[in-house]
Length: 129
Image 1 (cartoon, rainbow, N blue to C red):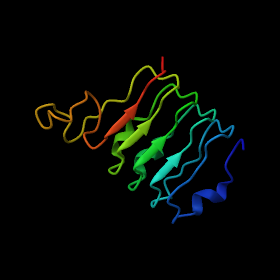
Image 2: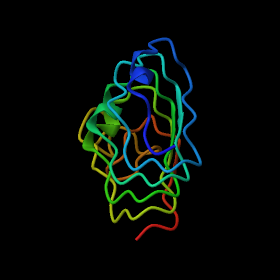
Image 3: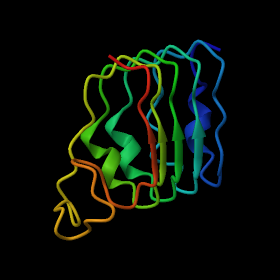
Image 4: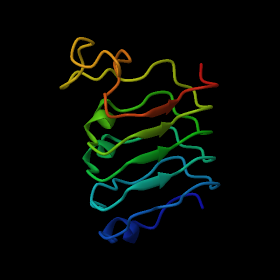
C-alpha cells in the first residue's frame, strides 16, 4: 500500500490502525480518529509525521520505527494518553522538546528526561542518526 484511502479518516470509532509493512511515505491527517489508541506504522517509508498526531487524545502507543523520519512534530507531546513511542531506526537527530507542565526536573525528578513529557513511559530511539 502506497497511500491510505481518504475514507479511513472518517472511521471515527477506530481504536487501532495497523499500517505496518507497507510503502507509505506519508499519512493523511488522522485527527478525526478521536478513539484511536494504537498506531503501529513501522516498516514503511514515512518521511513526515504531521502535527495532527498531537490532536489524538486517546493515542497511547505510537510505533513508527524503521521509517525515514528526520524529525518529529513538536505536537507529539500534546497527546495526553501517549505512554509508548518507538522511533527506532529512523533518521532522527533529536526529539522535540516538551515545554508544558512537568517539564521542569524539580516537578518530577524521578521521571525527568530532558525535553520529554512526564507521562511517557517508553521511548525507543535506538539506531537513529
